[in-house]
Amino acid sequence: MCFLYRQQEEAQCRILISAGRNSGRARRTKVCVGFLEFLGRRPDNRFMQMVRRRVLPIAFSLALLALVSSGGGGRAATDRTAKVVVITSGVMPEGDGLGGGDYGYADYGLVLRNRSLTRDAIDVTVEVEAVDGRGLSLTDSYTAVTLVPAGADFVISGALIWRGSPELAGIETEVHVGQTAPRRRRLPPVKHVSVTSSGGVIGSFTNPYKKPLPESATIYGVVLDSRGRIVAAGYDLTDAVTRPGATVAFDILGTSTTVQLDAVTSAKVSVDPCGYLAFTRVCPVPGAHS
Image (cartoon, rainbow, N blue to C red; front, side, top):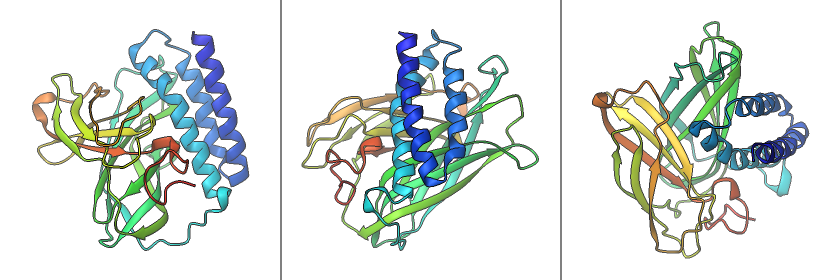
């Protein structure tokens, strides 16, 4: 089974490398190679099993980002009247030295805001770069978000993995909006959000569209303390098609080992309705499919 995972992961990395070379983003592929080596070290670890399950959508998202950025599909990123910015960020280094000291690892969470009140932002890409104490890059991560509606906030989370033992000093972020459109789109509404005793986030969301949500729909969650600081973050895929009008529960596992539950006061959750299948026919968001 581990060998099959390895074959699938290598195949997806080859897709990413090919796309990256065409768009001038080949440097990202070094993360993919190191990531595969990292995954192969702990086949029985529950966390690693969860990460493996996410390799496919992550690889597809990055490959899609590279193709769109290079002009694939004839899309031009010209209309940037919707301004999406990061209003809150948090990074949670893993203190136990995952990978036996050969690799560093950290979770991160961001709160994005579309400052435009009249324009929806579609095809939003977020780059997160990990830097050391000298400001040098350790690694980077890219997230593609289908939609940030006009005047709305959207939370995302992700992971940073780098080779070696340099200590993480912080993160730098950059946000790009691929296209905008007049305000009329909405995200799946989220209800009953709460933090579990283990630091996870639970709740439910509803499909508000006339079309089903694909199994790639992604639920992002961040946990906040009393000062509004992000102290934990995580995400998961629905892994199942959600019918129009249906409500489904989610349970995002807590991945941070440093969060103090007595300091946690709230959580924020956002649902990307398409995830790595944005710009395909199954995406129900107008303007976010071919």
